[in-house]
Length: 352
Image 1 (cartoon, rainbow, N blue to C red):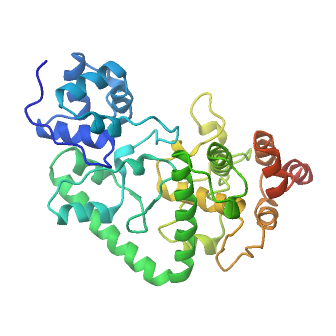
Image 2: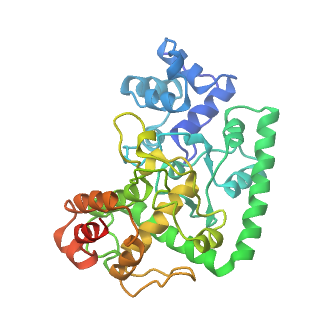
Image 3: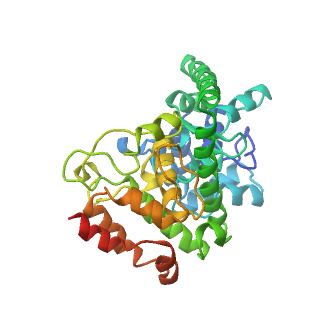
């Protein structure tokens, strides 16, 4: 079998889509066009997106052929095609970047690339620089090909970095509290996905898969619109001071209805939300509800135990959402649920 004459080797922590995109740049083609050449076919119009291309890349016969064409060592192949975690972002995977990581790549005179961890829905803070990840269409264009818009993307990232530094200096301790909480829950989720149990003193007695299940349920509840009228989700309905202190950290999109979700979907999970600022809001709320130790911003009483914070934050939640979360909690470990959580069903009944 012939091989590609020029193939950039994948970086140790590079995502599959980022590497395949960089390969396409060597031949001035898009990832979809390069994949069409590999499969000797032509994708239909609706299958030419980045998301559809990524799904095609995970097809085993295609995986084998690409590995042979690129002369990939076994270890590099295993790193690129890692086993799915069910937390991979479904939309706009190439638009999520840490501006400082990319600027460091450029300063080191290397080609910027997307990190694997950025593709996980629980990853919203760069663990190297403790900076929030951002979503940038121009950054995606910079990765796809060198064009004037790509240059604008790099300028945009430098502007974002400047704003992030100004925000960190201005909001100081309050913003630091939010970042610390997000990093704690993010690192715990990452370790749990690798099979490491969460720290009992912080999260209670949970196995790795149990922690991820609870986190998925709480964040899905936080992101879903349960009201029958236009309303914020719980994650987007944080207090004004939380949004103020979390400037460029915590975000919201728009008031919505469940009917806006794709057909067959009545909830909104983390991997369906490309905007990292909204996912940060959901994780911040999850940390307040789940962690035994949580330092809140100044307009809320943090409470010495999660049950106190749960009563404070859930007292105004939609009854339908509380019933949904109560039903999901039946799948959590009984000992953990009774020791860490208030009676959600009783709270929902009182809210009717």
